[in-house]
Image 1 (cartoon, rainbow, N blue to C red):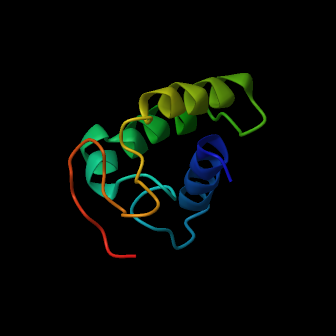
Image 2: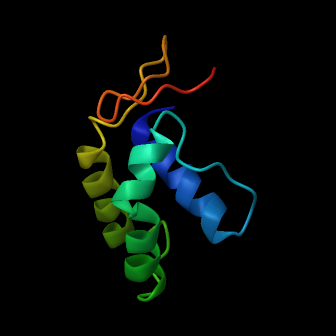
Length: 89
């Protein structure tokens, strides 16, 4: 899966109140939490009752994805390129 699909799955799972992880797959949980994307998502999307089929939803997902390129975990080491935190495999 690519970053956009990972973001969509993460937000959909959270919105449906299903069990989820701390951050989308492949994204540093430390940096994800500091950016507070969850709060921005719920403020923007749920306040306006926007569904995943809506253009504004996709625009938000693409906006977030474009800012995440530096907080992606390196697959071989699971080290964040931004905050340098290491995660167990």
